[in-house]
Amino acid sequence: MKVLNVIATAYRATLEEQDDTVLWLTHALKSAGADLDVLLRANAVNYVVKAQDIGRLAFGERVQKQGPRLAEDVAGLIAKEIDVYIVAEDLADRGLATDELIDGLKEVSRDDITALFDDYDHIWHW
Image (cartoon, rainbow, N blue to C red):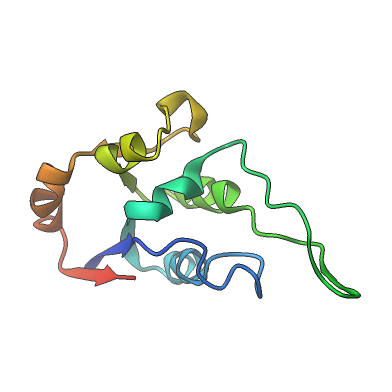
């Protein structure tokens, strides 16, 4: 069973945790032998910007010192031989240039997304 995780909602649970829950789940499932890839669209294309710095978040005395490193998390997926697709138009809509992004990404146009879906048995949209 081949699965495509489509991630559109960005920064889900990243205040409470050190990573996006879907990226974490994808790492875990791949380590367990699952055959899956990722498509980042909408605001989730921001995950692959190299220079992002979340910094520290504080609520009174409570400081979250280990913010998410989403670009590193996505690079880790690529290192595990997971194809990570990004929607070119979503990058352009946000003013992101390809030289600002991590290496190893596969760009796809909005018009080609349905053809990409044909390559998978299941599409999970987050």
